[in-house]
Image (cartoon, rainbow, N blue to C red; front, side, top):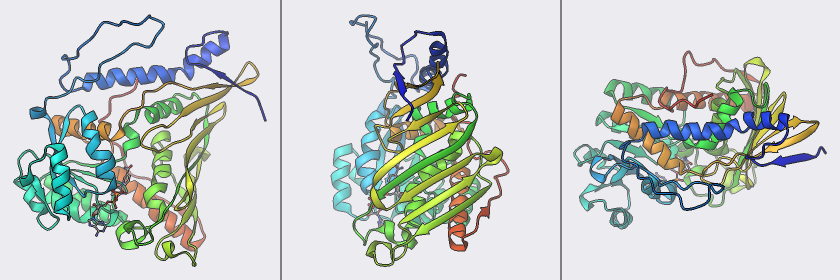
Length: 427
Ligand code: NAD
């Protein structure tokens, strides 16, 4: 095994080291650039408060968060479905958001909704159940409806929200099939409302840094991607193991992170997939959906992505991009917090590692702030319906390949699937 020399982001000895730091360290610069670009977009810009620095110049500078929008100018979100993601991640993320606020709740359990409303300062009159979903139309301050329901319910609630003329943020996977995604896109277009799919990774600085580093050739020519996103499911009665409510097993739920990352990090689209699934007959959890899915996707120029996703293994999540001159690795990857990124490249005859220091940001706050900015500035979301649709086309091809034991060709999308809505990162 080759020795790997670790260098810190601020080490500057040696010419080739300096150049690696310029390239890999460009990742750090990119984050700074991203911060600057994001700051330009910040609502209420100009109202930043700067305090004097009291530590030595050798210490990291302190920076106040914000500027935030005051409550009365924030974009109002109705949260539909008060399950784990809403309670544990999305609702707490409003405290980190620059420009969003929760204003309404939709739940089948009024007792639970009342407790949550009391915690977040939401009026009792702004709670409804699923049958009364259309009441959101008249509720004060509802600009965006955020659908956080089981996958198999996304289509119905997106269609109903579009009919009300409300902008929509919908959790991943977008729906159970590409045909459903197409219907949802058409309905939102016809109603002239924005539709964004909640691919939180695409708004997170570490992923954006990695995307830029690959695009700038920092690991040379990209050859392959290897990834895994797996976990161990318990309760066999939960909706994630029900085909109608989930659309599939591990693949559309957690495997989609590997698939979507391979697409947005490379900026190219798979042309062909080969896959196999494992559905143990004797395990009550997997009567309807697969436990595991292994995928090889071929991209143009011979780039390949190989990933595994599982519902019956201990939690494991990593991503590695291998290039002609080095590799970039995120391990762990795909989580809400705590991803770690490193670059390794041969320098002075030694594999040299560079670990950029990137501030951990709340991905749900970033994603909701992007939606709010699209609504306020009338822009198309970066991860709109087309992005969700392309993933579903690929998921269908993956299942077809597994069912036929043959590779399946995929027609690439005719245009870009991602919108122009994110500030560009400097090169
Ligand atoms: P969950 O099971 O914790 O919550 C689902 C909610 O839907 C519950 O409040 C439940 O009462 C409600 N519900 C309404 N009708 C239902 C029905 N017929 N069957 C089951 N539940 C019903 O699930 P979750 O983890 O909050 O996931 C919700 C959505 O968010 C899914 O689409 C999932 O893929 C997505 N998700 C995304 C992320 C992410 O990181 N972006 C993470 C987890 C989940």
